[in-house]
Image (cartoon, rainbow, N blue to C red; front, top):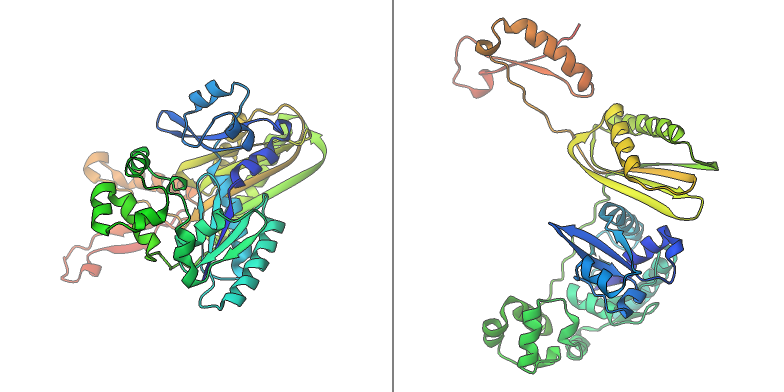
Length: 399
């Protein structure tokens, strides 16, 4: 049995919490795809103004000039979704999540009776309603996609579990227009008079594959019970975070910069202890007017040192527009990985007397990469038939 938890307003609820001054105003979240800014999530007020997911930011503004436009903060959304998945490990260790316009979480409960599945679904629903930032619904089925459809078609705050013999009857009532597909696919279904999945499933598979392509073939197989049933094992993502809450709002930028340097020292020490580097840095500030601002940067070069982290945090701070005092500050280091070794070559014919140059270079590299052991690679005078004996590795000694 696979349980799907659907939180369709996950992204919007997070941004509305960060911007309480925009309550009851239409809001859209957009992301940059090449040179085009596309709407990926929107509030109910924005939907009522005619805005839809996939629409360009310019067109959305044309339909509703008073719309609040918020940039996509994927790292922030992913971190909170992973935190929720980590909390759900008490129910199953096989968990997957997907963030598109909302959040969907799948849990593989293994082989369960219908009664046990109903009890677990009720418990999961109560847990998610208590920990998630928005309302949710829970659906269950033997397949991954069917469980998601069930959750989407269930009223918020409720759960519904399908027994295996009822799944096809349930899917037969699902409209094809509810599935995310290309415009051409929906136009073809309308031309052929295909409204529900039962209309599509009644046709031969070869005809659907020929006329409607892979999208139609996928829905045809879904209707006839060919659904993915395996959920990958969930591993808790590696990340480091630190927060500070202030008794009095801070308005002096010099104080914030000094505090960021202290936080960078603390985070750098944690990374060195675990022999990890960060590939993504997020800075979030909470203001005394109950609003929040955040900025995320994906790094070209993974970082671990205090100075480099402090410089990145200072760069993120300069991107944020703050109109009131700061009451709390948090830093998140995400996508942590072990450091990748770097290879540096020095050629005698390029530098002449290379030994002094190499000694000087080693001294500078030892300071810059203090957590990385440096190794000299020497070549023996006689070549051996064993590959491992053709190089001599010795630690670089720095006085």
